[in-house]
Image 1: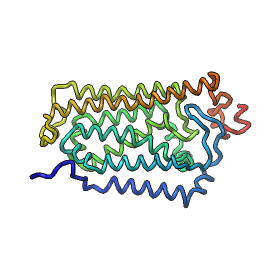
Image 2: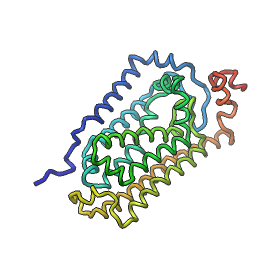
Image 3: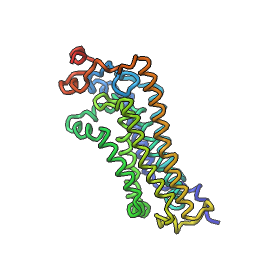
Image 4: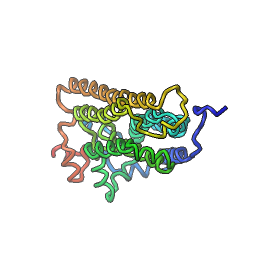
Length: 308
């Protein structure tokens, strides 16, 4: 009797080594190098920027930061290093689509919000990198880069190449997580130097983000042709034909993929309405000109910036 595919754990230790290195970095940043990182990051503003519920607190590390960070690490480990990966790679397209949604919808927001701004500010604002990072974390480039990568890897030729070559498959998942982190920044970003979108902009941005997985899912579920030969030749472990598996995979990408963005959109819309009501319809950052403050090299919370 052949072994149960759902009991086959991936042999590749790569994801666990990378996640382990990330955990070690986080622990050292929170302890051994905390004071140096806080000092090298410089002052932080006392204002609440666009799309943020509260101003940044210099050097803050709360239990919620730690919970979100380790939730992101564990979620990534389960997606990339569990039988879900093995089944998605060799048996079920549905499992692979679920894996892609986990690493792009769940992992990046958890890691972004779990890592305090002071931990990454010295790197992200390092002068040689800052101009490129500013572009990459802007809404339009981030949106285009992520969706080009995400949709591109689902083109049958590239998809089959990733399944056939483990190194390419690892590159696929790495690029998905990296570019998904870029695309979530305008919604969950933590550095005032690279601000979030205002609440209304976040709502529109997330609506647009829901369209690519909807289109991809519809194409998968409505076509009468098996798009990926690997799954047509794979042993049937779920009682589905390859075309039925593809239809379910498309529905997984279509429904949860779009609903994931709409869930976040709904929460942001609620906060937006609540905050506007509490502030009498005025933005809480109305007396600050962060763009001019950044150009002049001043912290937005300084008296000079307040009068800019």
